[in-house]
Length: 115
Image 1 (cartoon, rainbow, N blue to C red):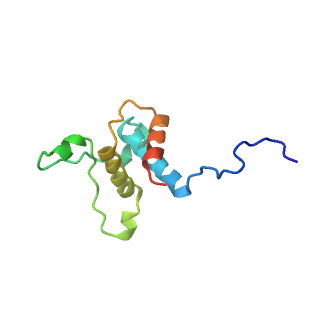
Image 2 (cartoon, rainbow, N blue to C red; image 1 turned 90 degrees about the vertical axis):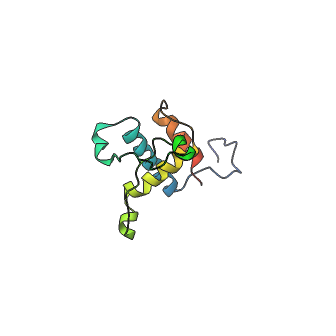
């Protein structure tokens, strides 16, 4: 006996993978560090990248972060190395998100990240 009537019984639920949810959470932490300046996450803060030559690409992403050099495979998998790269890619492809709330930012990242 079915107690709850489900209108979408034949459809597959739209669930995200665990890695997708981790990526959203990681980019949300970067948002909290660099946009909201949450004090207890201050140790994760990365300096802004200084451009040697001013180009149109640099003008489009002025808040791009300096990505630390990662020479070993173990270091390449660390939080800062991974999510600074994702953060820079997000800034390059999306308009400015200074005035957004955390929830709006998460929705933006969910739509931006590949499934």
